[in-house]
Length: 324
Figure 1: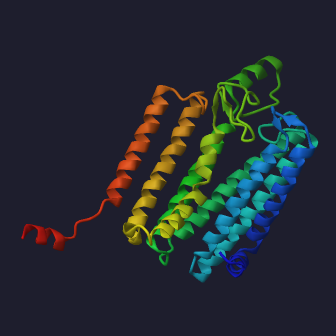
Figure 2 (figure 1 turned 30 degrees about the vertical axis):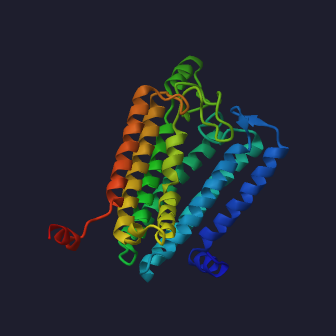
């Protein structure tokens, strides 16, 4: 993609483009802060969370800018730009809250220890809902778009659908855990309401940087995987197009669309599998036999479906000639 194309895309949704660039700058700042600020929060470097969120928003924002450019109708394009502006505004508010709490040395998520912390968490919860609704609105506009090639259309629509599923999994983290409720009944206060981890407290042994629990379930994993279908499925189409000159069967847009459909089904099922695993208090690095069996079945079904789509077709003429 050349610079002229990038500038053209940015003009389609200026607020979202500015937000994406700002998140890229923030990611660089967070990287520097990781090296300079030794503080830990919840057992992880304190700047790890804003770094992860800023990188995620760069990918999310850049993809939405591209998707808005796919809307052909002028009136629908205006609504798409408005949805992009809402995403940019909500995302900015969320990042201000996260970085502000980091500067204060306080947790941003699930923190209701003080009135101010509770207010910050309430604002963040609101921005999550706003982001979900705005993304869903853009998805509706793209569902109505009839000018896209079928493979790109399917990638965009399925990517948005799975991303909305991934976003929705975040709501499963916001309810107080049984341990938090029990502690509150004893102490009369609940400084934390909600958790990423299941079966173990937040802040225990975890994978480096991402912070995913290695001793219990972690709902962030399914959330992360689902959230980035928005980038993954369109990238799959680009990869298939790049392979098409060398793989004749991929030159058929219907074949590419079927492969994208299979990938979208796999991505959604994997997201649900990871959430299910986490809800059973099971670490991502220690799956039990049932999780392995379900995961293996998912891989086998996906591989068989892919092989069926890629299998060379015998044309009627060839069949007739064979019979002769």
